[in-house]
Length: 399
Image (cartoon, rainbow, N blue to C red; front, side, top):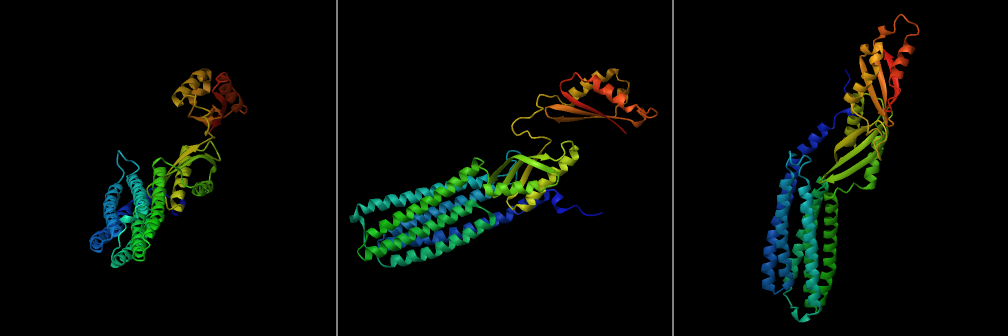
């Protein structure tokens, strides 16, 4: 017996594999963040101690910045640990948005850091008497800081891109903001030694704008995720094209997407080529569509496919119609005077165009022995419900 095609396999196995990878994801985030925290601790001590010894206020301030990096490292570790929790009754989609909320916080921290640097720089521009002449080796400490923090930035950013973690990305940019502030120290100390103390403040203003802009971008993207903003239009169109390639799909509408941490979720209504397919065949098409999206798109982890026999994007045409119990009771009451109604095997209802098409299945022997039997029987069933406004058609089948 041939194995089922990959595209028809259930997407649940793929989802399970993605979720099984979450412990490895957390381990990498933890390792990367701890490495960055170790560097931050050493640099914070070196900058504050060196700044006091070299009488460099900018180096001391840069050391305080490194201390703030330690705080955000702890936030990243806590958020990443909480976000790896498996789905539960209260959080059926998982806990990945804890990372998103933490990224908003980190973005705000970057904005505040940028604003603080800018404020201090403008203040010193208008109070040049506060400028001091530090020792030259303060530049060496700042240069070492730039090298280490830039290395931490690239190390963290590689992991962020690999695991699609905006939280790590924000922390990487926080590391780069520390490297940038150390560059300001170099410019400031160098300028002070050359008698151009104002260069420190001018460079700091430029760097503060860069830091604040990156913090705003990270916070905005994460807030958009929290309010269920859809994926990029190019991604949505690619998902639409993939769904249209699934056999049996004629069209689709109400394609909705959203992001939850590193994973994307998709909801879609699919119109079938044949609106009268069986429930099981419609389900098979929906499962195939679901598995295809998960297979083709790395970020897509779950897909909800709603099968539509007709377009109900604006309004459901048959919303006013009753369900089977009510409709079948009405039909059988109307067919009480039809002799063949006692032999009915199955009644199939098709809700289409705001009305109901009825299929009645009778045993073949009901029509045997009479050449013209099928037509009179069909007419009796049709005439019996001709006054029912909800019934558009009656078909009698023999088998």
